[in-house]
Length: 357
Image 1 (cartoon, rainbow, N blue to C red):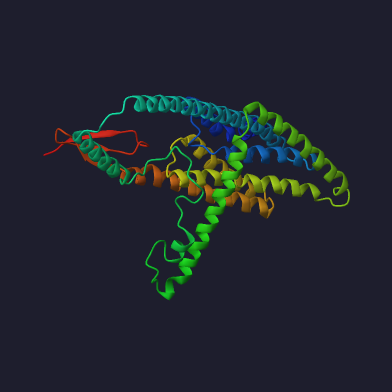
Image 2: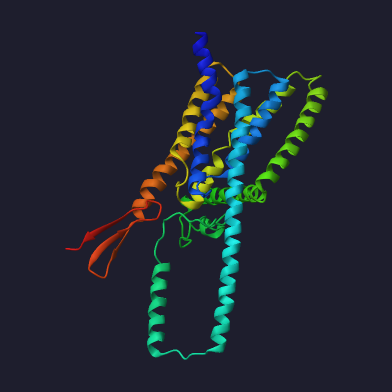
């Protein structure tokens, strides 16, 4: 029985971080951070730090303390990798802009030195190309976008929501409550997108080493504040440490929300590893069962159930964006030789040729 308990505690320490190790390897392999929201790791870095501070005021299971310490190391490494990849992408983009700027200046100089008259054939060709470009721009693209969209890019405006999401505005009075709810939901989603944008933009300003230094400074400052809180308030209120524990638990309950917003913005779940999703779902199920079995406080059970709801949303997004949207994004194009080419969105990375009958 003692050996079984030790194995369980070891699994409790290591298992929650396996999915993030897989996500780190995925980021390192693809050198892309498009599919993973770094705010997730920032949330867990914060909650694990607060959990250690909570242990100072209230002793809980030692395995959970080890889990928090390992979590700080894992998510610190993941965030450093994210910042490294982002910094490299920014430098590459700046180099490309400088190169394109030099090429444009050279082309402009050559054009000024050797002016040419456009022939009718070239004008006709340009018109055809313009039509083709217009046709391409008018196509319905459901593939994931690599460029970050604005906070409300895919959400309806307040007037559209009031008129039934772009309707004629002649909605019946019976539909007014649903339209009002839709408008409020759209505004709330826009607020969430703006908050996520602000947090992620502030995070991505750091270089990896700068982020480590900043975290250490903030963590030490927070530790001093928590110790002063324990000394002053804890001496007259025995439940003072519970406030720190609930703060850590509440922050951790929101860890999947930034990933949900990222999927909705990109209309794709590509780049997020399946192992990480399984880690979320399996870990939260075990957590809720344990809280109920151990008769923990209601706040623990509520936060665990809230995390399960967010996990269900992530799974639904995987099904919707990974299967339905890709299927709807398939476009049939007739080639020059009469062949029908089925071009699927880049997320599926597959192309099929069918000979026309």
